[in-house]
Length: 590
Image (cartoon, rainbow, N blue to C red):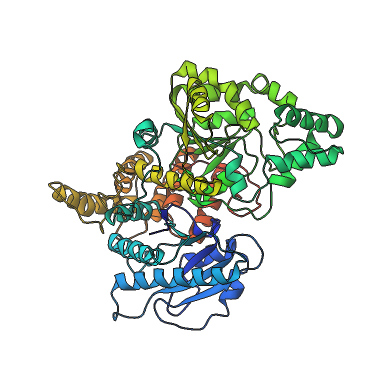
């Protein structure tokens, strides 16, 4: 098989891919969980969908070409449900996958001016309110096997399955392992064994740089330097010249003011049609509690939102206190935020006085370095921005005696061993991706992140209480008791009258059950969390319940409604989730 099969959690409609697949019934109706999200996030989809025929057969696929040069280039609509019992459920899933992939590949190969590697994103077919909802593992195996069969005959194509819910994500990871399709590690895993352990124990901090944003189509540092030089009437200079880069931004501030620099950064990084990439989705599937970035854009926050978790942007000094909450994904934006041009760090004076002017940020970094393992992604080792930042935290890292890792796609040279030793002495272990050229090394880095996410989830107990995953071993009777008796009692108690103290106990029990894959037989899981939220007068407790409800939702409309409830609890607004949106921190995910 020449292509890779990735699995990442999130909303498929916000992912940057060459094609997105839409799952429908044979009657091509607009009901179901997927339609509202596609209509909202994929421009032109709703209008093109109206022109489809009234009915078709299982596996039939229809290509909807999208205008513009960005991603996605098209949506492939596939009939995956209905059709009676003439076909088995597994065969329906296989036909849907084959129809989606072959149609998308054929259409893209004809429309693209030159051949290149394709990425096609698929939803989890037939796992909605009907279909294979009660046989998810068998359905996932059939879909993954069908994708592998197609990729075996179609070169230069990768497939990403994007489960919407966390439990379906774990089901697809397990199914991929069962079929022997789990990604191999492109490196010697023994050399960084501490990293998967830190991720499993949720004591890893992601430190993300401009390489991720550039891959999404946003301007790189070179474009920013050129823009500054052009507006100052100066000739372009080498982008690796740190002194020139800092001085140029300083001259711009001195001539035009800090607010003008903020507007320029907002213009370059705060809008447009850029979408989170597969690397974003895989990184955020690692479930890190804290993400540190020098990027100005909101792609990280939008990815977290696409996974129905709640991002909190830490931009100003006063925001640092929010990192103490246990129910959030904190995105620490060291160099400011393009939304509003706030706290932009770009000029020489900004760098030189960074920790002096931002003591709370300095203390936050130092505390994280003392207790967490850092993983740097999206930086070149000769990137002046990376060198400037890392040189300032190297002393902290050495004092903390914590390991740090940096994923790099820089080309290997005769000096590479010396460079690796240089960084190792500073407490940083390089994870150099293999490949003959940059494209191969970047692809290896995405495969590495997929492997890392799979390894980090290996010991997660997420499927032990899933009704549709067979129980094995001596714990089968206990499993049945927890699913049937305890689960039923919790479901009934959540919907009945109870005190706040009772609601807290129920929330603890419900958390245990759901973390192990349990889902109610009657009311939706999201509905149970909302019932508990209604029992609380304390705003913080109600927020936690609503955040849990948000993560358990299975559709876009329900998620939007819950975000509105959260906004009322917080007294703020939530606007992440659409390309080019500006965002106000709201709350935090569990």
